[in-house]
Length: 391
Image 1 (tube, helix red, strand yellow):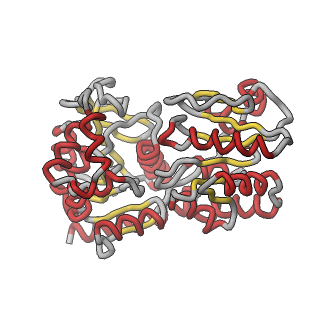
Image 2 (spheres, one colour):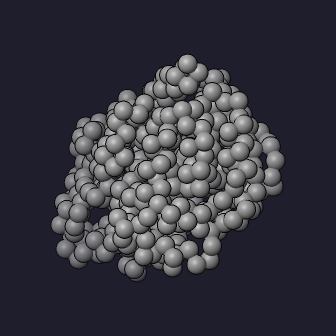
């Protein structure tokens, strides 16, 4: 099999849910299934500006053939101002307005789509739904295309331009059942070939001593949150809920925020913000936590939640996020919260976790989200797509 991924940016140093998912999946298909995988992408590294960073041309990265093309137009400086009224009233956005929005967002790179059309791959997979290469590429590839939406219930999903993407897709690969149900409700795509493949979880090497050095404390129970630190990711509300919890509960407890800081959260003496840390340190912090808090409302999967569960660390997730709540429901481990009272009960539960529940969390990951079962599901689906396209 030859599979082509089309993504807006790509690289081992690129940190992002969809981009990381595409890279991990491609590398494992090469290493474990012997597939020929190519990635067609832009020269951009930053998803805010889409400025060209990498040189154009072809290279080989971890067995994957990588082809880069320069961005013609990145995100325009006034994008946020122009975008705000559309996001606030998505039901009133026209097809023309939403197409213009996609162009203003960037990255605009027709060469990426042209290369995808000319690719000899059996199937061309676009990842995620939101950007110009997917919006313009899927209609041209049609039956040979698979969309990995990485979708969640956000206003942008209601823009009419994305209906054209899903109506033209030859197939759809989802991360969770919640994502599948959302897309099928919104775009009436239940008859389109599809699979809930998920992603594989790899438990990394832990550096407990490095984690203690970064944390600056030892022997105190703590919760951790892994991901970008910004209000739209829920970290501001999380710190507020934690503050209220500490006011009502005198026992020592800390909150650790790990990840790139976009927006500094409210100050609290028991909140530690580490910034970005090395992977072994991250695993060391995660392994020592009483619970992993996923405060984001807009997630389609959450690697952090599954990584925590692989260690037996229970998740505490935003109840408005169907994808992360699904992990709690299907595994029988973890808690959801909508307000401060729910959060209090969740934290108390995590601090008093039954060891049997920790093992159940690990078993959930082993059964569904190690690479072997994920690749089996995905490979069957892509083979069937290729056969259908060739018929």
